[in-house]
Image 1 (cartoon, rainbow, N blue to C red):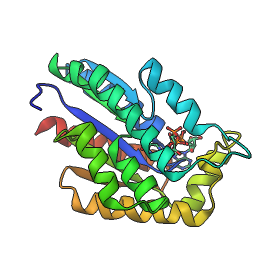
Image 2 (cartoon, helix red, strand yellow; image 1 turned 180 degrees about the vertical axis):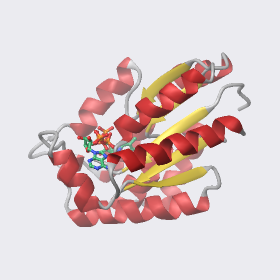
Image 3 (tube, protein in one colour; image 1 turned 135 degrees about the horizontal axis):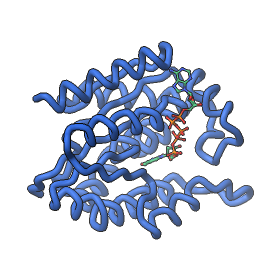
Length: 209
Ligand code: T5A
């Protein structure tokens, strides 16, 4: 899939600080003269937002199977990529994603321990060769991230998982970030000001390339 815009993704555990990172990066890209389109996953189209509500909802006595969760993530991604991301990249716009495929590999692959081949097949069906041009992975220790997320209010179904789930998810994120030459790791276990400076530096370097 050849496109003229760029696709930049922010990844990380809950409470890593993705919301403020998106704002900083969006401002920097706009200042460099590009149109920015923001997306989030799961979500970003009417149908994908409905799927987001389903996956975050606590279904109480009904067990949400790991397979159903995985398929819903890819269903939402298919809707977003085909209806929003690719058309905007074709127009030369820059798309800034709050989460993308690395989330499924980390949460469903690492956290839920779903077989990697199963995820690869879904990725091949949904995305083919499509990949972000740049990923900023915001690394946070799970305990700290969950503390920050709790400070914001009630936890959703996934946020209620135990610490070991988030530890496996983080470990998979760290492995993926190391293997991906288009991924920059930002340490968020420091003051917000220091994190924001690192994010600004990373995006400026990318824009100046
Ligand atoms: N999911 C998603 C999957 O399992 N598979 C998938 O394929 C996909 C796409 C989505 C959920 O779905 C899962 C992952 C998620 O569980 P979401 O709402 O999009 O849910 O994602 P969350 O991670 O839950 O979003 P959060 O809003 O919790 O995370 P953020 O955006 O990283 O956190 P943010 O920016 O709101 O920060 C939280 C608080 O921490 C403070 C902030 O001020 C804020 O109050 N903070 C700091 N405090 C101190 N020091 C710092 N350095 C700080 N940085 C931020």
